[in-house]
Figure 1 (cartoon, rainbow over the protein chains, first blue to last red):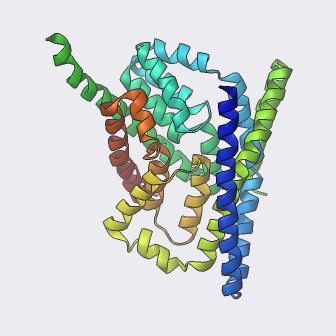
Figure 2 (figure 1 turned 180 degrees about the vertical axis):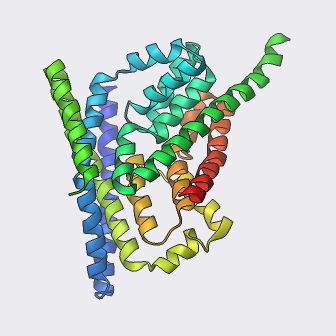
Figure 3 (figure 1 turned 90 degrees about the vertical axis):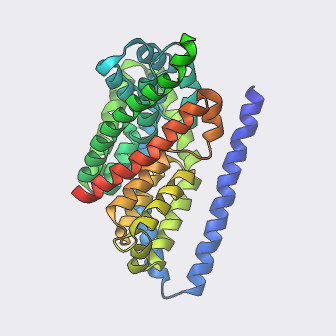
Length: 181
Length: 160
């Protein structure tokens, strides 16, 4: 198991490095081909680089703190328990805290489903994990501002709640007749 | 120096201090994780930043505007939604990318749809989601996410 994990990680890192080499090459070629455009390209990259670097270490520390403080056990314990509005609220909060890409959440959610967590809470948890996580919201704040971030957050919460209810109803609609026969 | 950056850094600093007072070993572990993930993410960050530089430096705003701006219409809007659904980059990086689109003349709605489909829908991870959650759940979740991403984007485009 451990070996397998160790083998996988450098592979992905390598792919990213190849990608970086590739785009750097394009960057250099473009600068050589359009010397008049190069100040604009370099200054745009530099501005975004600075904006990123003043927050990225903090964001990574925040994610590191979540990794050690918000364990899978905590999520499973609290998410499986409650339903209704309170359950939804908890699903939002728990989804917004842990870190990692969405595919890390699938095995976790599978365990929750087996334990009987409601489908709507699972949908809400997955969606919150995907698009309104706290570290993400901070990067959004930095690059797009308060108004943008808050508006998107509120709209996302509304629509994700509706989606949770719809998916729950539609999946029940399918299973119930089969069960009753 | 801007307020947001100060706010974010002080917020994290407070979290870090609270965590340190509660449990030193856990906090050290958190910092280790942070350093590791920082360097793991760095190549992708640089890729996106170079891409943004090329985009802003070379593409005149009128061009961007034709694809994902006021003049683009439904075709461009749906196209950018699909691109977001297919692309597989860390969601943290969708925001600088989105900001650069906006700076270069894109409209709000297509930018929001891009962020939302990029983060919520994973065409690449679809098989994995099906394996764990079943076909029906996966297709419903991704399908409805796509439609709602369009709704969220259109509303944001209208009110911002």
